[in-house]
Image (tube, rainbow over all chains, first blue to last red):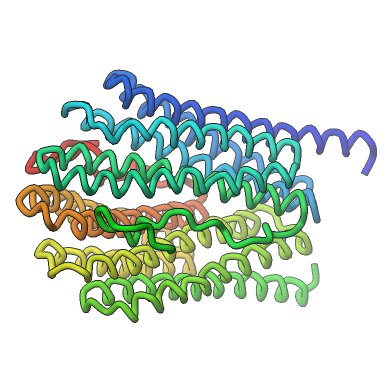
Length: 239
Length: 239
């Protein structure tokens, strides 16, 4: 390969990386906006978020098309090959984060039909952590920084802990106020969506770590979501 | 390329395909088993399913490793390249189906702590449709049959319809029996998990169609899950 060709190839890889950054930025904005629509009870904004998710989906297709083109034309091996395959996987996680944000926006319009719910207050805190994790995992990806990816991966536990306590609080709240069952159920799914966003960021962190270091994260994934076993008012049980 | 090399390459592709088949078979079994554990209230079986999910995760890693090796060594282009990338995506959807089944198994052990719930009866029917869809989409993948993939894709609506009506039924049931809120909430998530399984099969159907026909499925995805907007006893609203 001539010097010229190498540079052109690097340019293509950088373009692919910057598409991932852009997609991550949109996913983070969508999450922020959906929580904002929920807290400010702003249905118009919520409907706009649902519409804007299409741009995130388009970016996923664009990344796939470019990745396949680079694979076909450049036939990369080793690290470059692994990096290109990783962009395919990361874009699929980011697409899911966009979808979960869209779903929060949809549910917010139903939650807004009822009077404000007290347990909602923990939601913005969960989302704040998730948004910071998105930003940091994208930085880790761009900088190929395994240590940063590991730090993001560990932080997911904070979201899971907030989710676990909110899950129990909502079950108790529903028993005491059966008339609030519909909005509380949607709030449960909103919380679950943010918890899933955290899982997808954790996936991305694992991919980034693997690409940067060539090895899997050497620890069991912190299994923070124990709510599959949760009962109202019950103690946290390990998953 | 000599005749010999082509055959070896085709062998490798067929091996990759058969790994996908095996992974799909395990995912389908896991779904069947988790519903069985739920309906028969069999906690021991449920714990076994949680344990067995690791084999599905391992297969995903094996498929990725083999796909990357084939890409590096054979440097395929056009259809072959697209097919290999598609196996990466399909294995990630199958891994998620395994995860959702595992989660159903976990939740069944909590549901089994309460007396049997009437609305549970629709769950096996939802799972039956999903299992048939898994089998058919795997056949479509092996046979590169776009028409079969499209038929699977359309069938997802049936799962969504069952989910929509179950969602409303459960909200009403919880209002009438606040003491059943904990098991009903877990049952809601079980139903949601099967609905998500349907979505992942739909994804696979789209990938198979694209690989076989070189074009996207030419119809808006049937958006059957309208529960993000659902209220108890309320009418179905379009998403």
